[in-house]
Picture 1 (tube, rainbow, N blue to C red):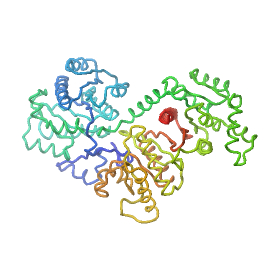
Picture 2: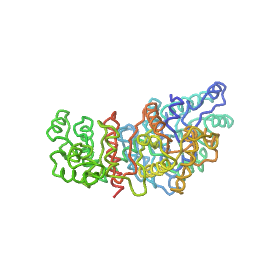
Picture 3: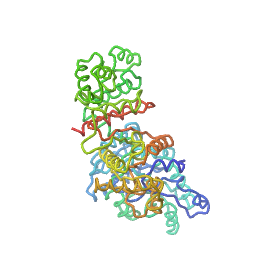
Picture 4: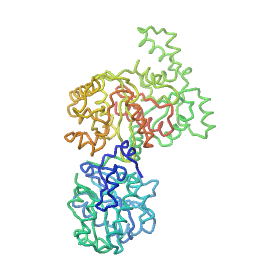
Amino acid sequence: MLDSNDLLTQGLAFRKRRSSLAAKHKKRRQRDTSADMPRYHAEDLMKSNSLTLLGNVSSDTISSLIPRFSELAKSAKKKTAVLAVCGETLAKKLKAAAADLDQFEVAQAADAEKKFSALKSGDTFVLVVGATGKDNLASDAKLAAQLGSPALLLCDGQKAGFEAIKKCLDQAQTCLAQASCYPFASMLFGVRLAKSEENALNASFMINGESPVFFFDDDKATAESFAHAVDLDNIRGRLLDAPELPMAPALFQLELNSKARKAKQRIVLAEGLEDRILKATDVLLKGEIADIILLGKTDEIQKKAQSLGLDISKATIIDPANSEKFADYANTYYELRKKKGVTEEDAKKTMLDATVFGTMMVKKGDADGMVSGAVNTTAHTIRPALQFVKTKPGFSVVSSCFLMCLKDRVLVFGDCAVNPNPTAEQLAEIAVTTAQTAMAFGIEPRVAMISYSSGNSGKGPDVDLVIEATKLAKEKDPSLLIDGPLQYDAAIDPIVAKTKMPNSAVAGKATVFIFPSLTTGNTAYKAVQRACDCIAIGPVLQGLNKPVNDLSRGCLVPDIVNTVAITAIQAANEK
């Protein structure tokens, strides 16, 4: 079961709260009900373009629903595709039912995300069918959460009474909550309840028109019974007619790799002898995510890779000391830094440092981007970039952000690695640049300027700084959706936002979080990363003429792969 801290730090952007009329649920409602169900806000559940069917109904029931949703999609001028992530027997029945549809795919759980991503587009509605059955509810719910696809909970009422059905729904929806899976609606088949009992069930499981319960007398959804049981306008409007659900983190990472693969950039890794770098190189080359240049002694790198059982044969290995470009690089460094007191001999010694050499490769156009920091400090990685790669025109500060891959969405945190105490002008620039970074990676920027107070509730120099920074950011980019000061809970939680900032277009649904200092930013990203067991990609450096990115010294191989992919995408965007 998710605890309230988990939900808070994940920043689930949709609202769904459990409520019950039964006495046994009163205590649950009196405590923090955020621990019971994920929360959603309806304005973001629009145009989801997908639905995952799960539950304990027969294959005939599921098959009967396919043409019904296809008809709904057609009414919205969309194609329909079915993705069957289930056993062979059910898949065969589904294929027969989907004979008139545009696409039909069978997938295993391991490749479901890839196939789902390929099927899903603006004009295609994807119906995902899980393994179904009571024993598979948890795994199907997890699949739906990973895909970012709303779940349609199907239940065989077996002519049971009100209390039995209510208990069944309660258990099933709790299972969905544990997987952070959004329950779009529930359908009960083979039940005959009084209208008052149907209303009571909807009062228990539906709030503000979300997650309604629909009732079928029979065990099949015919065109007539579907139209009778289901509020078609409600379902069509919520499912097909209006912004895209946030991209699921797994799909976000697939999209990163896909974009990087298309860009095909040359990325230099300065710490070529480090085990994690070599393992990441093996992954990157096999996935054709980027062309990799490793810095270090050729024989030592090859020997280390061989001892680890890695194939890095497609990588270019350069020993800075023996490079044909060494003299040119050292001379360029000397010319750029001689006014700072650097001598020609100093320049040669400095250029022996792999991080400096790799940064100069980027400066001279011999590499498209650089990644370092698995062994070196952030300061060591960034310093050469500040010295001679320099900031973009119109930018006065280099900053950083982290792409926080939570269970159901990706948020952007900045600045978490570079600027200890930014001025209002710098904070405004960080907000604008981080929003641009978010947009470059497919995340719609809704920027929250974080403080210890929301709106006009607090006073003091720290609050004044954020107020001024928010004002300046709006002047820099009038089109930017930004608000501040906002407390973190008001920025992330729609329920809190309605109380603290009811008129804010950002509060409760922020995607970009700008922290007022390095202390708050770095602490926040690490707290969320550890408490939620989420993937934090970064720090992604912003504001440089060409991409140079830093790794955490505690980074893992997937972190390096992600950072290289991001660097490649940044490099392609600069061209």
